[in-house]
Length: 234
Image 1: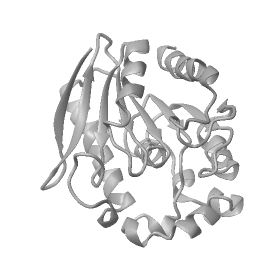
Image 2: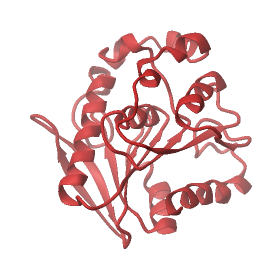
Image 3: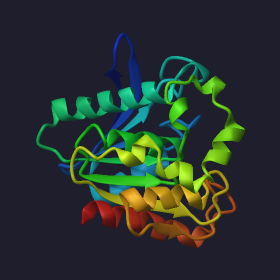
């Protein structure tokens, strides 16, 4: 496995990404959580690449890691555009490769949206977050975090979200991963994702929202990785 940093051009600027080159033909495009970075997820991605043989492109969306801009000045819409640009970067260089997409928390929200605009073969949503439709073009500094938490528990409103109403561009197989003790993404949100994206989620019992939370049971780590590897290798 070879790892190198690359720049993905957007429009007038570039975002930074890590490219993990492996032996397989398939490619995994990965988006990390809000305020996280590709560096913080390096160990996780390296394990997935090692277990599956896929190559991987892990992106720092604007305002994250080594990419430009202050996160507070970015919007979800800008990040979805950058996700599409990262996908296009892959397809321009590896047109024959199947592209799988994985997103964690906020990155799961972005990954789910990407599947509406690009052909994603396999989609992995790890504790995917959700934001109100009227915040799609709102700078993050103005997104009310209290209202976001309330919205994520509103089952009726969630079903009407544009993400769940818009059809995917292509047939996509989805692995939805739910953390059993997740306080940031409640079951109402993951249930809404389940109804549209995946009939049966994988539940990581006793896991908090963050994968690296010290309270997570060490005995569940191996099964967690195996679930992802088996999904990608099937």
